[in-house]
Image (cartoon, rainbow, N blue to C red; front, side):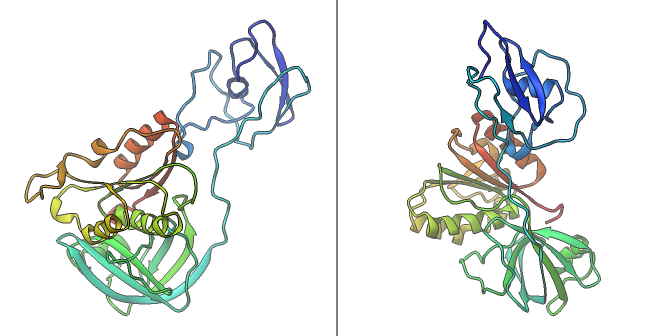
Length: 317
């Protein structure tokens, strides 16, 4: 809230006394005096109203705790954006099981682990093949919805296994040893509250598919709006998944592709970000794709005040 126009009020932020001038918010004052660090872009939160004070002095970000010594000053505590609590990384070992083509430039890689790796839909894991480098990927399900408990399913860009060599730094072939640790990331599916808006570009559909399918089981009455897209319509490999979602009651599904070549009648032209519906403050938005897609969705979510949880793709994935 803003301080009354006729008086200044006192408050304490992280143990430091502040004086809030007329017309300023308590958050603006704390930012301007360097008591807390700016949170622009954190979890999709956009910048607030511009402060009329001097630029913020560099300071380490801290949790915000407000106490009000003056009982006549009705100041609400400032809440920091919700963040996923630190989770213990679990390590597992296994091997590549199968590599299957899903589309001309999309393959599915399945790794079988010795023991199940606990993770939630939307989580990511760090995968290292024997002799290769670590790669952060998003586990998902087969496009038909299947996966064993001790399996990790990935959707990756490439025409064949040889195209994945640059991504992993080594040959990708059945039987190759794989080490996995996780979960990591902040795109985890969070049940409850508001319309679920899901945006997936290219193989970013992997994490979005996992979230959408889980939501249909956990919250069958929750409204879902899904937007998926690819540069080339031939790479829209997720149609079996979309049919399953429609059969379970998801009616707001939009498919988009940049190129006109062999575009089906139900595929809209242009980038998928042009087809995202008007967002609401109560929406929960999950998006997965390249940095430009995630950045565009973040801007839209921040403008609406919606909660935003990105699932970034590793370059080349």
